[in-house]
Length: 385
View 1 (cartoon, rainbow, N blue to C red):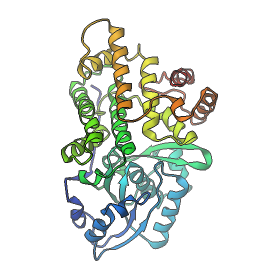
View 2 (cartoon, helix red, strand yellow; view 1 turned 120 degrees about the vertical axis):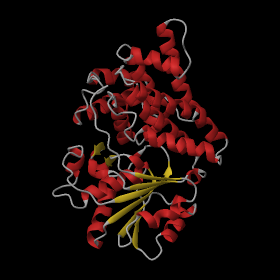
View 3 (cartoon, one colour; view 1 turned 135 degrees about the vertical axis):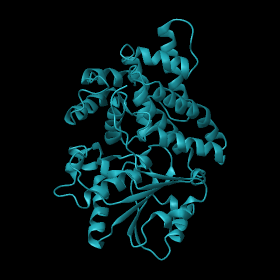
View 4 (cartoon, one colour; view 1 turned 90 degrees about the vertical axis):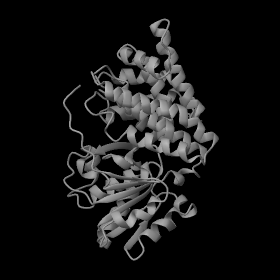
């Protein structure tokens, strides 16, 4: 295991009815901006609960943050915060809304062009507004980490950043607020969390058995609980387990002290930016092919994964690895997420464009060994057709 620091200051308030505790964690004198997405929180009663919890407080609202939050839209919120002298953000929604809040928090007092935050991956952030979150869509883990992904539509660029200044102060996780999610979002959320675990786990042995066991436990729970969420959408225990899995998948715990990959995500970001695919859809497409193309470099962990997660312990090594990847892909399909580029209308003619974007964003040495070149990415994309 490598030397590492693990720092996560986010307070989690988990369980039914916890939105009522909002008044305890938002400063009494705060001038709050409530951030939200497409309007579902107005229909399912969440926004009413937020208003009730903040009764007597000063707050304004900014809605319309997209599933892949756009720089152009978020900058409108930045200007609102500056103009109205607001000083606390409350993100109410899924990971995209929370990601948007992180960018807004960092951009409000940033000196210079805020796009530089994305260009420098957050290394130039020196402060951020305080913010909290109410999670309504478990998937990205943004509710308990310091990372964010923002798309600049005019450039067709989807960029990630992180900063120690961008942890939520608190996040409220009420599983009942996920009961009304569409099937597509349930499937996407499970696939997203699964891929997050794989990016930190599926590398090479690093003498970190506890991180491995944590990761495998999350994967096994997602495999067990994911289909139940589709079959019984109002089962509180199932939704609670999936929600907590998604949070633990990317709060830094399982990645502490171990090598991490993230090549699947980087290729996936370009597919989203170019062709407007859901984030989880791109992961379901790219991950199985990435594992197949890089099988030799990941052999030891693939065999461990095959044995511990899919109970494949006998027979030829290559056959076990191939079967484990097939089962992974089949699980994504079982969750309703298609796993081929062709399923989304992306063809061989589009591959050069994707590779061009990867090159322009300097994504030419990806993976835990920095050996995912453009040539490797081409192989992955071609295998994913």
